[in-house]
Length: 182
Image 1 (cartoon, rainbow, N blue to C red):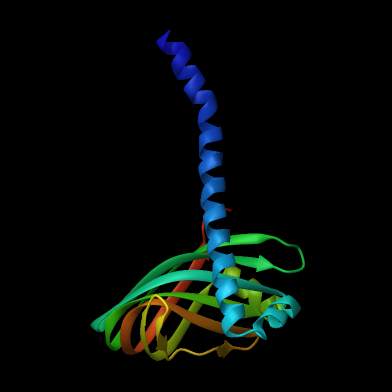
Image 2: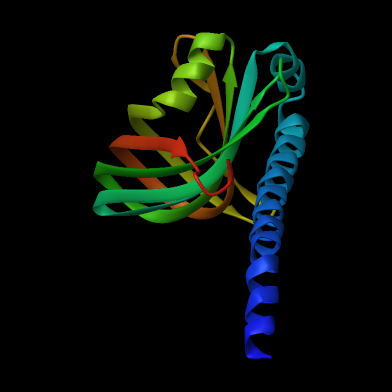
């Protein structure tokens, strides 16, 4: 009888893994939708920019700055407007500079060219300087981050959810495919 239970468990295991994968994908898509609603409320013109773009990406991130070192991590999805395909990705960052604080924020990338989107998905590396001030708790507070075009063909909008941070860092960020969700 033990062998029968093991056989049944073995046969149903792929279904459980698939259900978990679908739930994780759905969680990322819900985060994307929530971030876009907030961004459209703050910057209504972005909705048409995203609709006209080749694609876009939305990431949820948490960043920590401790004196001379900063680090962060998160996940997100790249959406190809032509094909409708979603590509799930992770991100991690590290940097040096002066800073102190913790920040929960979201980033929206708008890809104005197909090459920019392809390069992001395939290479996913951004090395940039960053300076901002953010203080936000719930609906109170503000932030110093604004939309910035960092490379040709890509616009980035950053929304601070919660946190307190003051920083000026040289930061490297790596974006890569999430092998468990793609």
